[in-house]
Length: 144
Image (cartoon, rainbow, N blue to C red):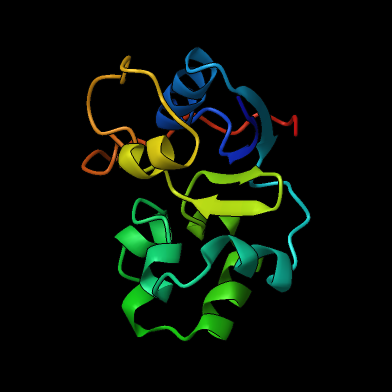
């Protein structure tokens, strides 16, 4: 089983479900606060690999939902600069196992990469369940 460094937004219900599923599948999860981590452009880019720029973004981020930022119109350099200023824009979770880095939690991809048991939590465990509500997720905790 793997040790997964799991960069999350503390208080995010889906990140909690994802961590529980990984742990129930036998993995060790080391949770870190995505919002307070000291990111550099190079380090953050490594998580995105060959994904299109639009897939780097959290579609539930307030600035994306409001239309202030349209990820499909951004180049990589602009996108990274925005994310370094506002980490809420970063798609979650960011995961690291050894030298391998991933973004997002597609159950099929995570299962192929690390292995998951059949105890999948109910609902969509990647999309924010509050996308259509005016209430944001719980406030992030001050720990990292």
